[in-house]
Image (cartoon, rainbow over all chains, first blue to last red; front, top):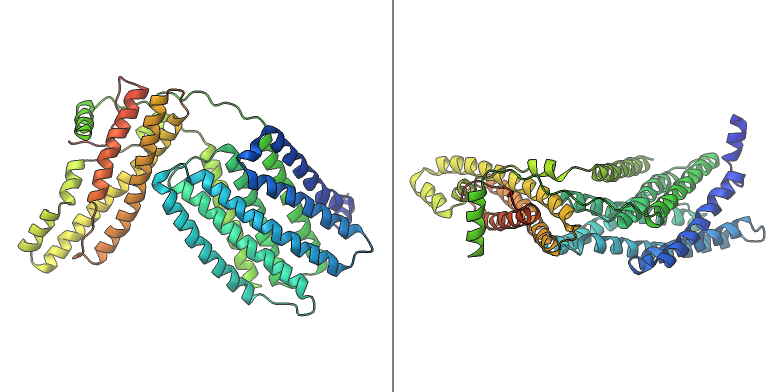
Length: 263
Length: 178
């Protein structure tokens, strides 16, 4: 049994095929579901991200299992997909930010400035991390791809932490759909940052890299299921909130305060 | 490898932070318990602490070293007030947000107003605390907390209005004094 499980944790095993293809198929189904429910009007960049990720991963999968495709060609497609996905991901982050903070005039501008500042710091930090990483001159396209992934995930993680932290500090509620999207992105970004940091900054043996690939694929699969749960599963309508149990004292003081305010 | 370890630890901490926020948000707290978390504030006492004339008087009457010491004490007291005001604001944001879902448009409007003012107060309280802590290092400087006081008084009015709309027989109290 143990040997069977170990056999599954190898490239081109049945589990490997499933974990690469299934999330992409589920993403296409999610995209179709979002379109049918009209959710794409509120989350256009999420829909674009979902469809682009699915197409990108399926293309890379087909290229990977096609024997005639050269490794260099595969990596070129990987770079192209990564750049498009990253642009859509950052547009999606700005969409989440707008949904969470735009309704509140009091802190919308502050939030925008803070996220801008955090973005600048993260770009600087990720550039420094990339500058100190070892570069493989023989396979520059491969190590460059790893570094680009690491850079993108550092920025993505930092912005998501800022959005969650900022909303927590001000106790702003995040709508279920936005929370689900942000949570899925966060889990994916944090796990991918950890794995890509290991791949980009250490000379791991091939077996370990395959294990990291499995961790990434499994995480992404879980995130896709989270998105389906938060966006397609109907939510229970919460019961009407009960009136606030307000203390009975100080009514006169409050009345005076209100009257003074109204003058 | 050191860089990899730093990034792995940072990613793990980020994930724990985000998940803990999400889990804590899902734990529902009733409005009654929320309202109980509001601490009364003596607006008059705070107004006295932020009075520029009072500061000027103390500056004239006391030796510079004594003035700095007294000013620091007053700033610490001011910080304590502002912290409570900020915490009360967060409670009111949550109460206001839970009231936003109501079908009654008047209550929803009052709730929206309460949330906006509470957020503004929270923001101002944050900046005021920064300024107070800076002023603690340089007690001779001015810390303009009068804006906080003004916001707090406005917030009192909004909370009262929302409380009366939701439950006309009972008011909500976030301060004592006039």
